[in-house]
Structure formats: structure tokens, C-alpha cells
Image 1: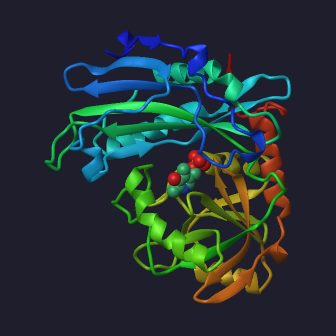
Image 2: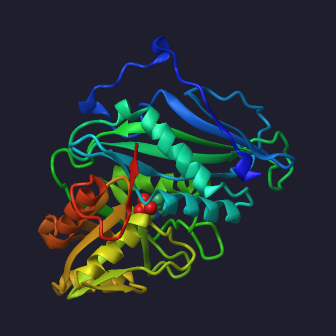
Length: 360
Ligand SMILES: *Cc1c(COP(=O)(O)O)cnc(C)c1O
């Protein structure tokens, strides 16, 4: 069925095209490009009606299952433009494969990887004028799948939409690295083994908002999540994976079913490993982290994720005590990983791992 999935393309008329936003005030996810991708699924026809079309609203039954039980999954990825104007994407097949892992867990249908990659490239190319110029500015892609069957029984929906929308985003570090202050919570938990913490499903993010709000009110940018059973082992930071450089090891928590398998996390592990750094995936408790801060063996800590790539951590607050990391400055390895990953993504640097995909 998938091989018959034709993609129709309807372009905006010139008067339908939106004015481009001010490149210096893009923010994150506030402006959307002229076109989107959409396809539909039902039991009889599988995926069908695939189209690249002008960005538009959906009209949906208020009983659509996504509104009630949250059967929704998404991805986050970027398209980049080199100084020469060549467009690239970073490991896009990994995002599509991960979406299929999420789909499986949420009893949603698989998407065809090759077809979606093709559609993604066509969509990015069609809206290429929306990729902002300037170092670090990118076009953010948001592939999403939602349950649209109108029914109130709790069961897998028999109808779905899969769509991709795109948003130009500014450089995350327009004014240079600014290490973040992190709030360690032992009051709320993000995910539990056996649950859905390892997949990108909407409810995880709804559940995290309250902790983030409390952290923000206390003057902190992100929440550091501990494991849900003992509230002791470090899991993730906000919507990023986390790394600690202690002594001559680079330590990150293992993927045990409650942690999202970040593509940036995997890239950091491979890249640092190729530099001869000893990368260790193991459980690490918050007490071990604090002891390492206090005895000076913790040299740096950072988060990893598509949005910021590398996000240095300058301070932790745990049980009302503050702990400064690396004098509140950006660590040497954090900086090197950031520079190297960004250079690979922008096509400025060799790509030894074949991560980069050309568009157009
Ligand atoms: C998306 C996400 C990450 C980072 O994944 P990348 O593929 O590196 O962008 C980490 N943790 C959570 C909870 C996430 O949702």
C-alpha cells in the first residue's frame, strides 16, 4: 500500500504567501512557513491522500480521540543552510524511525520511512526561502501524528492524521553561551519504567509543565528529573539528555525505558568517543553528582537536544542548596562539542559519521 502512496503538491498562489518575519526576533515556534505536509490513515486504506499543500487549519469533530485521551506523538528536527546556500538535514531517518518507535508504543500506525523522508525534503525545498540566514539560525520541523476518529471509547483510534509543519527559529545562543541554572526536583517525576517516558508522546510534556513553572518562579530555566522510584538517579534535564564530565569520564544515564533516546545524545556519544574520550552510560545518583561538585572532580555538565544542540549547566539547586558548576562558565568539552556538531550540521566540516543529508 505504501508504495502506491502518491504525494500531490499544491503550491500557494503568490498572494497567499505570508510576509517573512523579522529575522532578529524569530523566537521559537511562533511563525510557520507557507506549506505543510499532510496524509491520512484509516483501517481500509492505510496511509492515503498524501499532500504538500498550503498551510491550513484542520476542521475536526470535537469527539476526535486526540482531544480526550491524548493519542499524539511528535518529532523535532531541523534543516540548515550553509554559507553557500546548500540545504542540509541532520540524521532525518533517525527521527522518522524514532517516530515509529513512538507509534508502536501508542498503538498508532507506522509511517513509511523512505516516503516521509522524500516528502520532508520536498517540503523543505519548496519553503527554502524560509530558512533563516545567519549562524545557528535554522528551520525547525515538527512531524506530528494525532488520533482523529470521533469516538469516546478508550481504545486505539481507527483514523489518524500525520502532518509536518515548519517554523524558522533564531540562533539559540545569539549572544554566546549562557550556562543554564537547573532546578533538581524530587517532588515531581517525569516518567516511570513501563510507561511512555522513552517515546515522544504529547502527555509527557503536559505532565512536565507544572514542575517547569515552579522552577521558573524560583529563577531556574529547566528541571532536572530524577528516577520515579527512588528519586535518586539522574534521568534528563527539561527536554534534553544530560552529561557529566567527572575526572576523565563523560557520564550519561543509560536508556532504561524512562529516558528519551536523543539523537543529539547519540551523536555526542559517538563524537566524543572518536576523540578518545571515555564515554560511560551508567546510572548516576544526584548525591554522586553533588559529591563530585564539592570535591572538584566534576569538570562540566551539559544537556543535549536538537533545539540548543549543547546546553552548558552553570548551577544546580537541590533541596534548597545551590551548587555552582565549572564556575558558572561553559566547559571546554561542551564548547568543542557544540562547535563541532554545529559545523557538521551546517556542512562546514567533514561528516565522518554520514549524519548529514543534502536537500535539493
Ligand atoms: C526530544 C527530547 C530529547 C532530545 O532528543 P534529540 O533527538 O536530541 O532532539 C531528550 N529528552 C526528551 C524528553 C525529549 O523529548
